[in-house]
Length: 469
Image 1: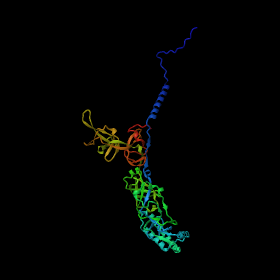
Image 2 (image 1 turned 135 degrees about the horizontal axis):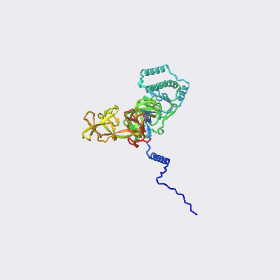
Image 3 (image 1 turned 180 degrees about the vertical axis):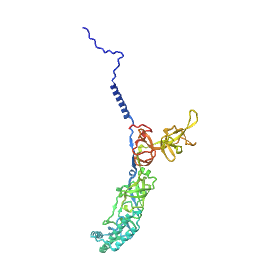
């Protein structure tokens, strides 16, 4: 039986090969996407920041809890008994002021309370005349530039009214006291009276330390009418001087920031009152640095407060808000202004320079104009990128024999602008700073503008580097 021959595919020489074009296109696309994906995943990512307007004051105005120190004098009870005060706390008193009384039984305290509740405290015609004269005297001497005197006058007037009422009531009670031990006391010195005691009345600056700012370690004991006092115990204090001090704790950054300060403006956060203060830095007993603010106003307003929350106000600086991480330094050639020639290429906004060269054919010197990019200009120099020159160029003033050889460089602070898809160094002028940002001058020649895009980390790129966003 004959064997069946297997079929064989016969290729004829010269027959064209059938190529699948669609398959090749798919392979090319996949390869392209793979390569670009790999490049995208492995290249450094450049973060971009959009420039915005900003102010420095809000972040720069740091708050502190200050220790208030005044010229305070503590006085002590002569005898034991029930104390009643007749002058309002934080009011001005003189040596003739009826300040307080002591009685051994408490009957006077009870009588004063009953008299006040029954509304028996009245002002005589002489009392009203005294108050009118006080108001008239203040009005005739009022000065708009010293508005803080209003608070002082208010305190003084309230103290006068209270003293007159209590004195009238006291005269009546004295007649009824009989043989009860009862004595009236006047201040031993004039000043502002306060009725609280802590351990800062005899404060000395050389004892200042971090513990001085711990409120819990320095409790405040208030004195009030009707309480019992022992002989020799504190009964009132007098502040004898309008000059007073606020001490604040300083960080190392604060010490550096305020090292050259001799005066500051502060705000009392309790009521937003602003005041000027002399400023100095002192060293505490613990070796740390503290700020010392000396004030001559508002002492009476805060006389009964030992700790005050304040804010040191910085000048409001407006400009462009730039992250500190964006700022770098770059060296630039400096060229005296007289070597620049405006409008040489028929563009009035550009500056050109004449470079001295040698003609290769004749060997003679010639002048060639160049118009490089100017990055910054001050009152003395143009600042040009060192990458735009060989460094051996010699410039000549237009229509003059004066020459200048490139060589001197100066570093400028700036950021990399990427508006055009590649990095361009832009010089900045720093006005102030916060913890994370600089406030830089806006609307400057060759400078930044709002909504410009800059590199967030300036150290991660170089000048004229293409940026893929």
